[in-house]
Image (cartoon, rainbow over all chains, first blue to last red; front, side, top):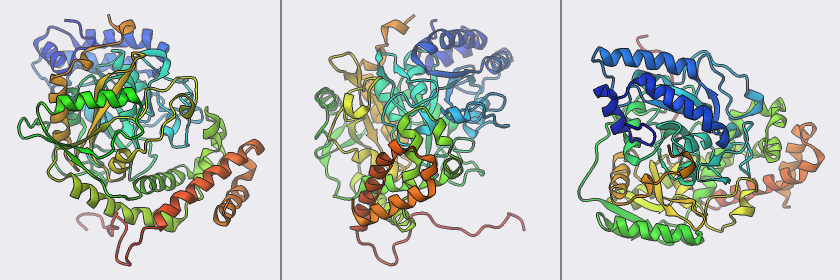
Length: 462
Length: 65
């Protein structure tokens, strides 16, 4: 059995049956990370010793007949904003390249408990993009490429998490999203990315960019894999007050699926993205009832942007006061934090007050639907060596991103095809709060009827 | 640049001017203008006195005490 590009259910079956040993799996993916990681700028630190230690333990447990769950013995990579004891946690930023914490992040602990094997800390945009980056070269490890083209960007800020999964360097990865940071790399790398409901996954030990917007979630080869990983990492954590006590179990809904499409959702969207979205919706119409909806005019973007600016300014206050931004990679990030301190307290509070209105609008419009569908991003994949506004200009407003992140709704992005340059496009399904199983049900059914997730970049295919 | 943006930009310059290169000041000015524009969008939306922020403060007390 070749474990590279194998879905998690298949890997899990092979580990359980003894067909594949966890040590062999770890060695295979460590070797791929070492060989291919630098070609993409996807890896910050290889956690080789830890991985082998964990793999040996997992293998002994298999021999004893103790299987912890579907991730037992499966290697993974974590965005380098997840704290790990022993190895550096750089937050993608040169000023933090030697930072070492004395304990693991909650999500790392949970995956340890599930028997998964941490193989690498993966590249990310410096400080998760909170300083206002405008180009791919905004990480001390260099711009991360999508495995589909060395000339194009992997997306961000969970750049390495997207690229490593798409190149088959790890079976799955964990990323984080404040606004777009899971869905963007999922889109650009042609894989699945799940942004869970805010509070579904503990943020303890993860770098804070915006306390009320940050979410952690999986990037995987398929939506089904995302559900498996989410079940392992979700759950209440008394040390993260935002976490929900609602139990999460990954269960698919098969019948009566209903999908809404916002009026004008493709206005201003690049032609190949629009074309693939429309084709994807024709597939969705084959198994779900599809209706058009309309979101009322509301300052969605202004609410989420103001919360993000104010919270990022506060989260990095000491960093800013000490002038450490000067050590960042992208020139625009070196002065980015200063303007954010100009958000007035009364405006931040106005945004928090409007947030409730926004949540009610979303719930009113989305009630009765399992998901709202939209293109994952409005443009095609940007070039790696240019500012985004030059390589992929566009006029579309990211209302679904502002709304979904602003009120903490789950969303999954899966590939919807390719453009003329052979670069992936994506479709996202956004759900009501705690509606991960609904969005996953749509995405899993969609992927059972399409082939995009089965196509892998040739130069990384073994 | 409107007077609010100008005032806020001068405040940022006063606080952090020693950390911002002269060539970067214009970019910081544009970013402050954008922040004020965004705030204006929020201010246009009327709310009532009773519309609270969507995060509720809860007094803290250790369990079992």
